[in-house]
Length: 116
Image (cartoon, rainbow, N blue to C red; front, side, top):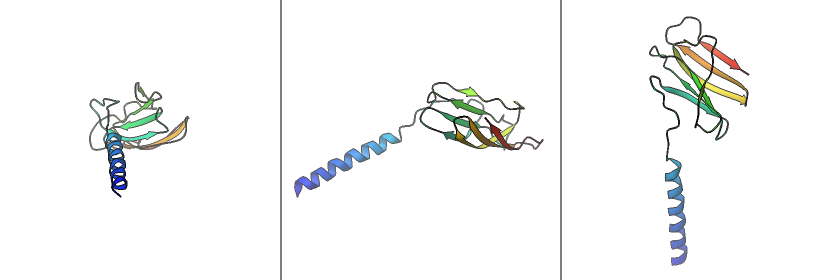
């Protein structure tokens, strides 16, 4: 009986240690002058981060990575100076996705955007 209790305690300790390490967050992208508002990752290497704020005049941008966050590229919009926030990102495949954008002051750019 003692062995069973000891084994159970050891297994609980291993499980708790793994759970604590699962929350060991590391920075992969510095967002100077803006806020992260949403993210979508297809896997551990490929993902997109939406930025901005619909409450203040901050540019709405999307950044993407294909190497787990070691490097980031900025996506190109028809208007690169939209002030607002990327509110959601979804990709159906590696090269087809959608994003929603909400402007700070409405000038006709709020809406759903599609990329291939």
